[in-house]
Image 1 (cartoon, rainbow, N blue to C red):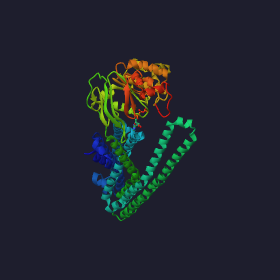
Image 2 (image 1 turned 60 degrees about the vertical axis):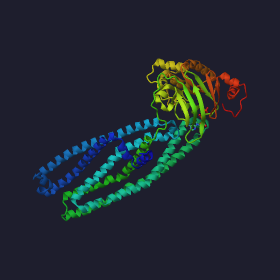
Image 3 (image 1 turned 45 degrees about the vertical axis):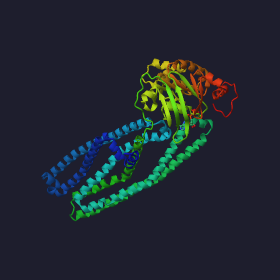
Image 4 (image 1 turned 90 degrees about the horizontal axis):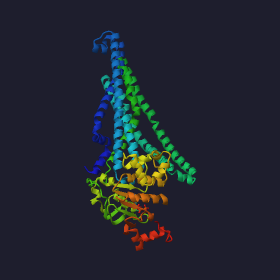
Length: 604
Ligand SMILES: Nc1ncnc2c1ncn2[C@@H]1O[C@H](COP(=O)(O)OP(=O)(O)OP(=O)(O)O)[C@@H](O)[C@H]1O
């Protein structure tokens, strides 16, 4: 089946698709349905028994119970009814318990499995997929949509099933009693169901508006809290308060409009119920007075009309849950169906990986945009340290992304130890690389845990040694809890330079064949940088290192420096060669060492 047809099917019938894909849930679902059926049948029986009891009192020896059980005494008949009632009651209670546990268990299991599956798929999707979609949207699918489906399975599905069973069982009782009454009592049902559907369609856009307003409000508050320092620095608190107030008022208005309409629903349904109830009461009563209907049956029917119609007041809510569950399932399945454009290869590199990197004829760009790298040829022999320098926007980070295979090139090849990266397993490729990105991310946890992230299970000594190599040991020791200091979700308690050093320690602890550093020391002071340089010289002695840096003093000892400008390599060589060549690099060097007055429009 083509991807397009598959997507259309998911869109059309998402719950069926869920049923088709996740057969591991099927047995539990069938069990839950069976338990609900048993429960509903047991639930209806006591009312039939009341009718039978009335029949016993009115007709005595000629009663239905006397006929079936062959017991003459009214007292004994009532005793039998009481005993049957007790047994049914126990069955009803037990089946209710097991049905609830089974439905909830099923809902929880589906929720858990789908959440983990959706998260796992999302994290395996390509970097550019994540970049092209708001993070909030993925979060909403993995979190809210999965919860929504759980709510439908937990509440909506059993309620819909019970209502349907109710109609069937009560219908059967009415059908036995009188066809005329069946028609009269059921008269409001189509009215209520179609009325609910109409109502729901009317409410849908109002609820959409509510959801939009609440999304706007929470994203505004989220963004503001994230940018709290900017708000304070620009004394924009009052302005932001007004913006939040306006967004909150819009949410309130949307809610008020939706509530005004939705609150009218139940009273309207009550009126429809009144019609059915009055018909049974009146026509059933007349038929009984005329001797056409037994008194016992009449009392059963009056009870039954109530039982039949009242649950229908909730039908709009159930349909709403159903529709939300369907829509959420469609979104979850669509996420699970998102194709991975940069799939793992199958080849494992022979170990130890030497670390020779080679780019030939590489062209690359983002999405539908123009090329940002135009035919790059570059070789980094194993064990050497090479630098990539150039003005901002030249394509340095884009080049590193290709080496990590966050993206594939549009043309040409990137090779590690002679193998095209597209052929390699992730473990062979990314497992051989230690990467420090421009934007350091620290996980909520201790410093030791953050350093050990790349090699869980590393010993405390190994963590400390990596920290020493990254010149991080000194500042860590000054913290009150040392390596056990908790760093916030985004490492907020640490300075930029401290975070960079932790990220460097994390990369070094992996002991990778290739070390890729993207502006890894841009946020540290000169003294710390000198300390890191000394450690790095030892740390990179036996491995390949690729260093991107604006500060040229960082890279002057590299075996080779590649100068990139506007997506092209314009020159390469050692620091001394490039300085004496007097080209672009020499110009940058002169600016940075103060040998030349900086030109304002040349950002280095
Ligand atoms: N994720 C992305 N999506 C789309 N375009 C991108 C993306 N990342 C970079 N670009 C574009 O690619 C070009 C090269 O950017 P890149 O980040 O590789 O430059 P750089 O040399 O690393 O710059 P800097 O020194 O400022 O980090 C720029 O024009 C940039 O706008």
